Image (tube, rainbow, N blue to C red; front, side, top):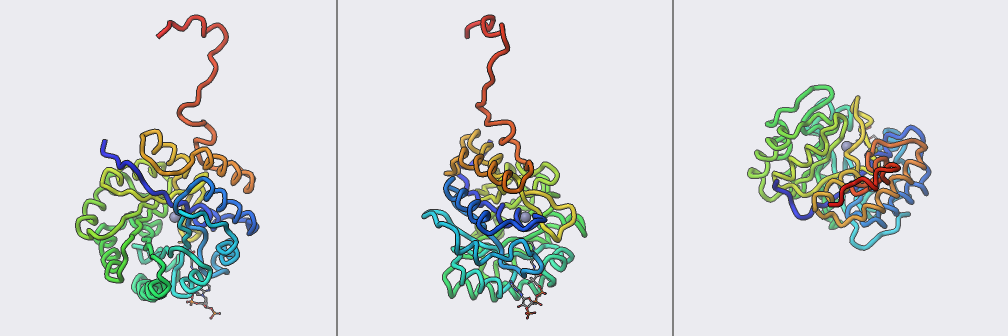
Length: 315
Ligand code: COA
Ligand code: ZN
């Protein structure tokens, strides 16, 4: 099996996850979660988003969260922005990186950011200029890269045309987002096999949702193609408020556990991540989708039932 030695995980739970929580999470608790993720050695964190506060009220405290967190040297703190106004706010709040959003499907782009794809691309041109002036790197995400909850499967040619327009704007890092978990591993591989040679200078990121239990298989398929950057969400939080049927991202601790079990390095302290997931469950007052928090790590052992130990033949 072809696997990289090391991959980079970007934690998106406090953005993709917290954005759909029904009850407002107090700012200090959001900050606490980001700090715990930093302490666990997560190298990239998408802390929040600078979007319209009425559209996503849960993240209306983006400035306070961004300026309130403790910055661990070595961690890159990013925020999601849809337009120039968001980029200006993010830069003022001191982000290390900007993550942009546009969809590969017109319907989802209109539902999500009230713009056609062409209008979004024009806004992203302005975002790139603001970021360049502030010397802040930009990662460009493409929502509904593989499938759209309104339109169905997104043809690869359509995804390719959005990638081409982002590359024209100067994008160096592009995230393919499977917003509602519609992609399958073969489709992911087919897309990457077409896009990677056509856009050789691009660093690819895969952003998965586990809506249909295909997130880790999709990540494995992308790793086999040479992708080494993945988004993930603590506890498996996540979901787009403007994509019906959306549910959580691939769970960070489950993904890191899988990678470490296979000998793929992440630089993340898995026990710290598991403890953070437990804390997030306590904050939200419910059990999250992650499996490892429930099952324990692969090396967990149980005591033998009474009377069995003496009868196990020595190995
Ligand atoms: N942050 C705060 N306010 C913003 C903003 C931003 N990033 N972008 C625009 N606004 C304000 C404008 O200043 C304007 O304010 P005014 O009425 O006081 O002048 C108002 O919003 C309308 O601006 P407009 O450009 O017409 O925005 P819109 O109403 O068409 O909304 C978005 C467009 C992109 C701002 C909105 O759809 C949005 O925030 N979407 C985010 C969706 C999201 O987060 N999805 C999940 C993550 S993928
Ligand atoms: Zn997402």
